[in-house]
Image (tube, helix red, strand yellow):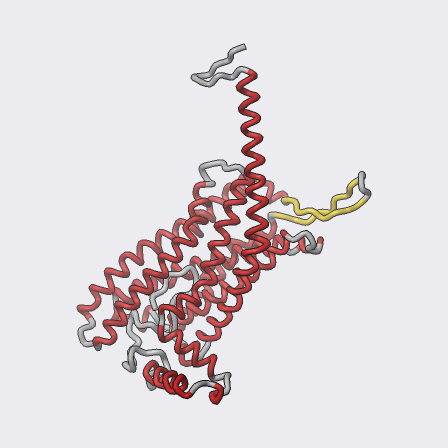
Amino acid sequence: MDCQVGVVNCDPANISSATEAGSEDDLYYDDFLRNSRFIIQRILIPIVCILGIIVNSLTILVFSQRRLRTSTNIYLRALAAFDLIYLTSVFALSFYRYNYHHPYFLYYQPYGLFITDFASNTSVWLTAAFTIERFFVVSNPMKILKYASTQVAQRIVVLVAAVCFVCTLSTVFENRVVHVHSNTTNATTLELHPTALGSNQIYMRFISTFSAIFFVLIPFVTIATLNCFLVKSIRLARNIREHLSPAHVASEIRTTFILVVVVVMFLVCQGPTATIMIVSLFVQLDNSLYRGINNIFNLLVAINACSNFFLYVGLSVKFRQTFLGLLFSRINAKLLPRSFRDQHEAGRRKSYGAGGALTNGGHHHAGAGTYQGGPHGCHRTYAL
């Protein structure tokens, strides 16, 4: 029988062909997911995470120095700390893809997913918070003590972390480990099953929409918009800062350049994950395809989390000199060439003012836009 609906022919032969094509797609997506798990979860993720754990630990060490205690560095240190937590949790979760992982590892999974989401969401909102602070400081340079104090920065870090913790906490209760007994093999295995909460379609729809809006759409729009205004505001603020030295003006330009680089890195690495989260609210993707793509995008997020240290070292002379100063202070100076010791000592004297904080060419001024110890931290919108 020919049962046409519009221009679609629904005879059995066509239905059979469509079913075969769908099966081929399913097999292709399953292979894609399997390959992405092997290449990304078992090979690339551990490498990126181990590297990121090391370099973020070094970043925290640099920003923990007393002479670098500024509002900017409070944010940068917190962002590096949450990057470290994120990478550590992702590294632990990657062991699930190895065949020899311990069965009781499943008990960690719900908590590991929560820690990963909590650290990632906190990093994103710290990025937005820091961007807002920088925008107000550059737009109102005369109110720097009001907007850019270490006390305000510490309170905002604690507030952001607390809010993200509460908003992400339900993740722990979405899955549970159950004992499944097989009558065929007479063996009991552990499996991760969704709880009543995780099976509730209303809750899952709500939490997906809430996460896409609160942790993706709002902070991304804020970061992108304010940084566009920030570039313009720095130029307009020069009229207010004519009394500042030419070296400080040059530092403002350098700060803007590094800020643009950091924002581009943030959008390139975080943008795909944000896009698929929003798209998945309106388009039903094949489960294997969606999870395989997520593996790729999660790798980009991990790369972003471990790339900041290299941005600091490559783009900021002052961060590099501070890091080298800490490194070589633990090495016997006699082991270093004399020419290098003289060059390093000269750079150190030039980079630090009498107060100990990083300054611009010896001019001790903590004005808005001055790089105070290092570039941005997390996902990553920071003026250096």
